[in-house]
Length: 432
Ligand code: 4AD
Ligand code: MG
Image (tube, rainbow, N blue to C red; front, side, top):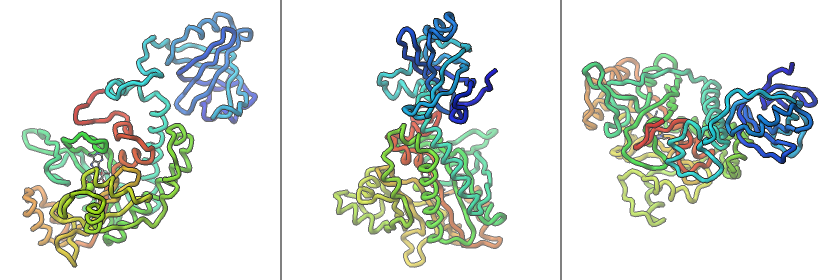
């Protein structure tokens, strides 16, 4: 009996008989010989069935087998320099597990985006989606490994909150046993409590934004990692962001080359993602945008087009710092030299991907924070606990939030964030 293994491990078994279990996603036949393309999650391999060498009934059964049927295959592993995996299987025997209906909707022909999204549960099986999901997984582990190496502790934050973190316009309200509550927009405020216990903390979980916009960068539900650290100022905060982005890009380049190849990702721009990144103040960015022909005025936030335009001259990610306080969240520390702007940054990705990180030093003075909550007309009751943090041993501190889907889209060079997540939630879509 051949031992079951996975396609990714086949190279270790050249010359031996093995068993693999998976799905037949494609097939070619020349009458006397069939080439079955099989995938098992870990990779793909070609199994060659020769009529004269296997049971007649089995050969016929395989010949009639529909695409996406599941099966177990026993065969001998042979070297095959032409294939990506370096091996193919000479099929000896096979057992069909379930015959797929003939009308598997995702074919070789071009499909519209809505059709693909309606069939997302089946679309996930395609090679491109497989590659994207594996890069997403690499980034998820990379994020956690980076924090561990830097001494950050994971602090899990609630998804149901009594208050807004990032402004009230994108809040998802829910009925909490007759009282209003909101789905979390970011774990940040809770991390600020966590640092007073653990020093450096992070979260990594879904967040929700009731974004009424349909752009290629916005999801309604997405995964965010927030980081927060005590005694870290705005400048050091940006250094952590820079180290993290360099680490993540290098990690995907190292461990997911095959997936990047499947996506036909030109990796030369990614190879340039090395410290130090350039910095531009918001003031300077506005002047640059106006020079480039934008009619943006000081005091307005960047739109997607502004970010893309600004990044045309940059091959590496770019820090834009010191945005006007009026367009940023209530918790950001004001610049001591200019009360109109905050000690915060956005990190913009090149190649048209725009903001991937937002971060800042936080206001740690009780009176100033209270005044800011009032200015933003936020309900003081809900923020009492947050203000407490400034009553009992407040310290300067900073943090940032990275949107997972934004960095996946950039690294994979995807036209839209909808393909970065297994089941995207968009303005007009919550199915499947
Ligand atoms: O810039 P944002 O709103 O910052 C915060 O939420 C802070 N509380 C983070 C912090 O300081 N701890 O969001 C952070 C990042 C953005 O830079 C972007 O990458 C992503 O989250 N993001 C979105 N991604 C997908 N869809 C959306 N609707 C997003 N909104 C923000
Ligand atoms: Mg932001």
